[in-house]
Length: 318
Image (cartoon, rainbow, N blue to C red):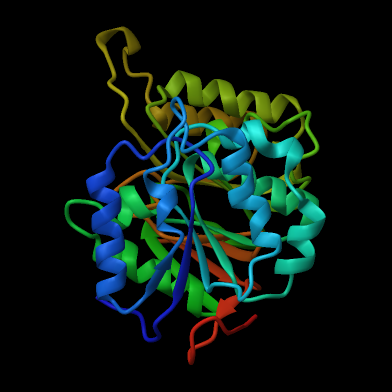
């Protein structure tokens, strides 16, 4: 598996300590074997308490991007966990906007990184990519060809279409700003300056280790504080890592999605491979999306995001 052009990849570790060092090493090995250069590998082993370094070190990972020269093609998070929220007040948003706006560099990751991605969207309008990370995805015991292919598709094609099976009702095509990511991290942002105020959005959500009742509670809060009223649709990604019990008595995610449809009137489109699973698509947060469902098939056309140039590392067109 390979992309057409060797790329420069700069690692950042703004969240939790990479407890699976072997997976991260495997991820680096795979990327290098595919012809890519992987820089800043020292952050993989860095540790302070449960974090990938002190707050100052992890903040430096982010703010140093405003002065990094030459810019890499890809800025890739090592892993998620917890830690970005501690840094949001001290991030150099103006410097990052000046350095990265209209430039080729793609910042990619998910989970805890969602807080940074949405803060950048809110404060600077920068489009980043919700997708694979070094340890959990590129360092998985078996690398998903699906994940690899969709990663490079999102980063190199100015317009692409995702299609998947969905149990949702038919939906005529609608358009909106594509945004979202990890739901638990998104829920840390209402009431702060770092929640993007997206009007007419297509909200894409995913999570792990969260029971359906907790997901419903988060979505009800988004409804009650007015966020969902500004959206045109919700797309549901992967929700894994929970164990239903007899006490639930049939209360599952399908019930949650239907309740949100009933109280908001929004289409909730399920079934997208997106999130903490082995197999995941990559989505540019802040791009333009066109969504439709027909005959049990959902389609999401994505455009308006920066893409890497097809020739030569460290260059791109957007």
